[in-house]
Image (cartoon, rainbow, N blue to C red):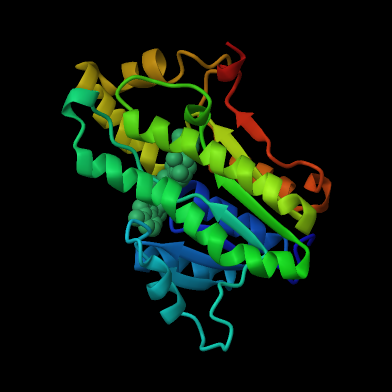
Length: 257
Ligand SMILES: NC(=O)c1ccc[n+]([C@@H]2O[C@H](COP(=O)([O-])OP(=O)(O)OC[C@H]3O[C@@H](n4cnc5c(N)ncnc54)[C@H](O)[C@@H]3O)[C@@H](O)[C@H]2O)c1
């Protein structure tokens, strides 16, 4: 129970990796704020782990107003968190010439601007208390590119930069910031992508997994959400205190190429 007494925000915690992180951090003793655009899913996960649900659309630049409105009234208007896991995200697969500009912009808002706005809201409190952990769920696509994923690859590379700047600014105040970089994890996001990729490449879904998704990885299997959550717990726990500004691949050897 290394996180007893800590409050953790996990975005996109209603599903997949975010839900696994919320469960794992709660198991380590943290009180978890389960933030998701899907209010029902946020409510279910929060009820399961004794956390606090917050229903917010992170693509809305004013999302913090809606967020604060769902918390108990407090004289402190800042957002309280000792840990933030920036996890919410989505994918859109299309060649650049067909990529809808509004989708590109939304991916940047959810996956880059929202983590910036959250960091801006929680860092002053972390600095005051002299302790904080920011964990950014990046991707192997924060380190490597793939065709047809212009917005996602751009957003994840930007998140890598933000994470490193937070690491440098936060270090004197006891705050670490890191990226975790998984390859394909068995979640609804990937299940949807398999169908999208099959359409884009004009091949079957089995072939997408074998020939496209697992082609660059040395270990030929999907990752389980709990394996990503275990790395997040490590970075938030006492063993991770000297790890900052890092990007940790969980990619079965993909980025070894
Ligand atoms: N699944 C993978 O293979 C994989 C690999 C590397 C990185 N990632 C990253 O992990 C993170 C989680 O992905 P996942 O696979 O668990 O996906 P998922 O689709 O299972 O879960 C994503 C969650 O984010 C929420 N969300 C989406 N848009 C939102 C918004 N505007 N506001 C608030 N919440 C929103 C969704 O409701 C959902 O609950 C993403 O950032 C993704 O890029 C996933």
